[in-house]
Image (cartoon, rainbow, N blue to C red):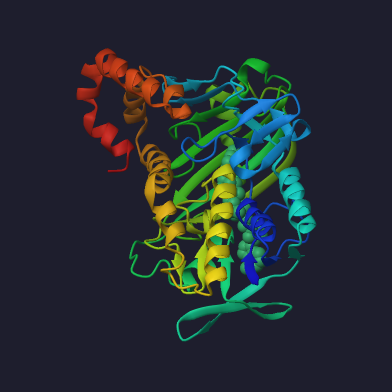
Length: 423
Ligand SMILES: Cc1cc2nc3c(=O)[nH]c(=O)nc-3n(C[C@H](O)[C@H](O)[C@H](O)COP(=O)(O)OP(=O)(O)OC[C@H]3O[C@@H](n4cnc5c(N)ncnc54)[C@H](O)[C@@H]3O)c2cc1C
């Protein structure tokens, strides 16, 4: 039985591989010409997803048994040790990661991982058509019955969209019907640099909050990933209500200002040389009320808030969606009711996790510099790593310690902390 898939990112390729292994005939369309081509910039930082995807590190690479996935050591670029957020006044709150083989955090070569997944999916019998743009969905009596591509029409009882942030087909399938929130846009420009000053102790990510160091209109958010000694990736994210809010030239200008003027990162980038550049515009939306329709499933960033569902969560969603699809196709029923197991999975703790991260970034990006200093001062009293690992006991004890250590600050900044959660 044929399962149509749109997009060969992590979600689509994992869905294709899983579907093929379950005996379906996945037929995947990807507009980019080759496996491993990336439609948008990505730092490639991965970590297990507590409660969903566990993993461990061995000499030969990273293993994620639930995904039946090994990322060979050759695709692991580095192991981050810190995730740090720094306020305009230089106050940091951070997660420091001691290396743990039972919870591997790593920077990987995402292109190579996608190529590996494509090879595995093809080896298992999936038909992957690169360089094939999907132009529309075929609908009959309110059901999705296939897709229209540059290469013609293709029909199947179920279509899975893993199209990423364009959300063209998840919108056309009606998943966002009834969501009347004005669209917002994120404009992201990035550079990969040879950065001789980036030392092993700095492996990880530093996000510099506030807008003091660029002339960009707020809100704006900069970050630098050090995936390996001597290498850096710089990202600048700007937000706005209109799709034409920024010209490409102005975005590169702001990035240059950020690199040159922000003392929290300029030392790291001393003597650096640009190796490559990328940019993208993403539409930000609240999560859709439904992720399935009659004959249709939305997966990965195509149903995420802002293009940051993440590589491992997308692999997991792709796998789960394909499993539900196989059961539904086996029963000959691809109605939303038959797909409800995927709906329940998505709209549980999974959704809350996605939502929280998105809210925090949005909340912080909208604050003034003095407000960010205060929030960072309060949060600097908590060890974020405990929350990152998702283990209940360390989370509870760390929260209790934070409440005791920072109670006056928490009371002072209660409203700001709520705003950080975008509430
Ligand atoms: C700046 C930035 C940094 C990030 N850093 C990280 C990170 O460090 N770690 C992490 O885990 N995640 C990161 N992410 C998020 C991560 O990249 C995404 O969550 C993930 O790639 C989404 O996977 P996906 O398969 O849903 O979609 P995508 O990877 O976006 O793939 C969608 C595919 O669909 C194709 N497509 C779209 N429309 C059509 C069409 N009409 N016809 C045919 N093909 C089509 C696209 O070409 C694309 O290949 C980052 C994202 C951004 C923007």
